[in-house]
Image (cartoon, rainbow, N blue to C red; front, side):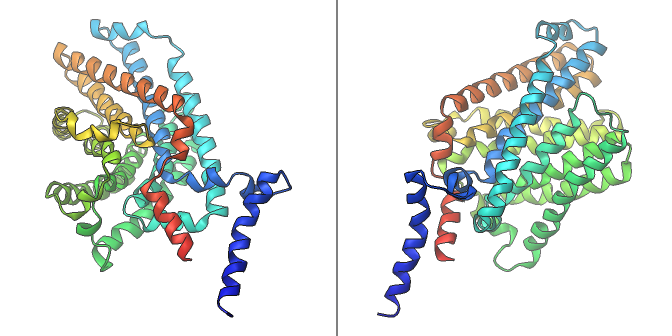
Length: 377
């Protein structure tokens, strides 16, 4: 009898805030928006990854069109000149909103953030907010890389990536239950992309040694990840069918590596071309298997944004390749990949706008894991 009474009191405490909120009585901040703070996990930063990368693509295309007189570049002038500023401002607003909401989640739903860190998929998306800010910084229209506040902001966003690297990469070869062979999945490549994005920013500031450090750290772990995932070990088979768009991250990592190495060397050299061709081959391999993604396309979910981000990085790498190899085929490839990237981005954005309620109400593997952990706590 002594054990049953505390259980009843706990149930009253859990359900009482929800009832007060429905009745319109006074409620604290976490009681007013329990659904958003509970459902908004780090995976939603896929949206800002796509927006920031798309802004960077438009900035690169605008600068390339201004500095190149080839006929293929002249077609870029057909787009309004304010497109880049519009996308960048939209990316900034969305990223600020998501960052604010996720900060509130860290304060009022910390057990769920902890659950994300323990989840083999969710932990990788903890890199996404910092990568989004770095992409937005590199595409900023009014901030030069040699400005002191650019360098300070870069350090603010790179430090959390390095902290997560030390924690996660250390677990891969020291923690008995968190070996890479047990946890590896396509989203693990986001940590690699974070190092490469940071390396590109450091190279643009002229910090070659820092850029090489981040690049080497990312590429060594990328090689290990790529071999592990290519062997189809247990981790890669844990991806639910509706999350299969994350397989396009196979395209994102070598594309970003090509861009980072180009910034470090100052030219699109042989290594940059090798990485670009690898990304192009992986994209063609995935594009030739539409049935693999059939189940994930039946109903909209936030994982659809995983299509846009890697394709945009591939298009960015193709622009660097076209600038280095001034021929019609590379220029045509740049236009095709850029058009595909823009079309996919627009399509996913409209789908998200039409299903905005569904996006926050869907069940998510990371969310379910967090709820189960919270119920056991």
